[in-house]
Image (cartoon, rainbow, N blue to C red; front, side, top):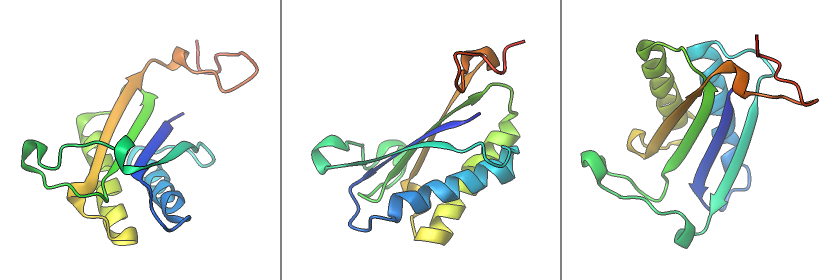
Length: 127
């Protein structure tokens, strides 16, 4: 049920953004119990003119290795679950790819279950 969008500045390693996506998916499974095979991601790499961020907003030092992750998911997760997800993604990216914790920006967009159609023109989760 999550839809994940990952945006980074263009990386010379063509496998890099897919590896970022794998870490995010593993964190979704471990931190908030997303089921196996529920993996839908849009991976985007941008030139410098199309990847704009404030390098010091809220006193956090960001670099061009910034990873912006937006996850649309069903509403209802606790604050503790969300915090666990943020931590799992940031630490996972740091351990797997050397991305600094400061360079992991995550936004959750919560929607009601009836706002999904996974195909066939059907709202699979609607009651």
